[in-house]
Image (cartoon, rainbow, N blue to C red; front, top):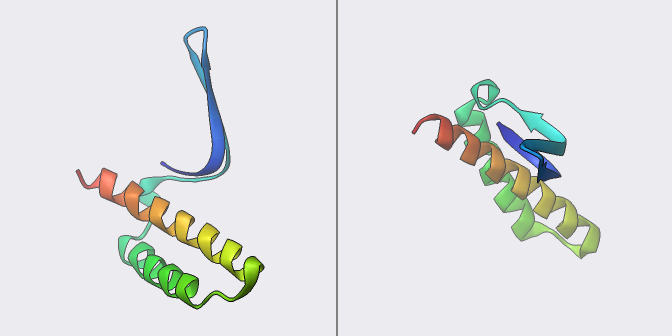
Length: 75
């Protein structure tokens, strides 16, 4: 699973995970994910101003998470 933002609580032999978004690795198109990562990296380098920088960083983190999820699936 690719989990986007959130936290986990562990206790009493239970794990509770709350996330903003989740995506099954098997649902992610590897080529699209890699292309999105390249675009996110380019957008970060072109970002101007605080808002664009924050949005570009968030997009980059999401793109990296998706690529990491498909890489874990192929291992």
